[in-house]
Amino acid sequence: MFQNTFQSGFLSILYSCGSRPLAIWGQKVRNGHIKRITDQEVKSLVLELAGTNVATTYIYCPPDPKGSLAIKLPFLVMILKNMNRYFTFEIQVVDDKDMRRRFRVSNYQSTTRIHANCRIRRIYFSDRLYSEDELPADFKLYVPSSTGPTKPKSKVPPPPPPGTKKRHPEQSEDVLLSSPGQRESLENVHKGPVGSQEDRQDQSIMKQSSDKGPVGSLEDRQDQSIMKQSSDKGPVGSQEDRQDQSIPIHKH
Image (cartoon, rainbow, N blue to C red; front, side, top):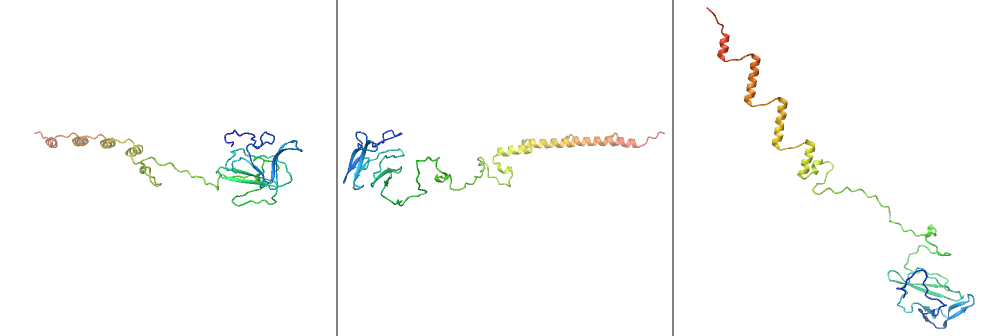
């Protein structure tokens, strides 16, 4: 009924001083009456409902039993006068799951009954409507953020890059390198610059040459050995020359 009405502040559904106080209400009367009179105490027009049975004389809104007021305001205020007679009223609401729930208030029931299918934490009366901040601590309902203590999450190492094998704690870094480029780069770091096989052989020969001296061919080394012997023993000639030198010359 009020679905397309802007709802803010106050929204009145019955006003006894208006021209048509029951414009949106239905009514049922049996053994009683519903009329507008002037109350002598407040000196104002009021709507009086009277009857021998509270169940046979009443008004209801909306008039269509299948209809709905579609009011979203959270509070309902009724200004009534106690006539020292039996009185009751009912409120039927539709929750967010489209379930209809009926609340009944009366002054002729001495025992308050709470029927099945509900969970109760506290029932209390108050002198006025208190906000959540004004309530005592034991009157508040706290919803815990978690059901139990949470364990700290252990840090998980990031996954290895594609193409690498899983490392064992006892394995060296060489096991982790699977691509040829990675292995060569690691060898260059540990062993120095690496060339071809011929370059490595040349470097080995040059190292031996620097340790042992200049190296030539086999004939050169033999000539050097003969020259060294000659320098140690003196001038060396042919065999005939050596024999001539050993035979003394006798002059007659």
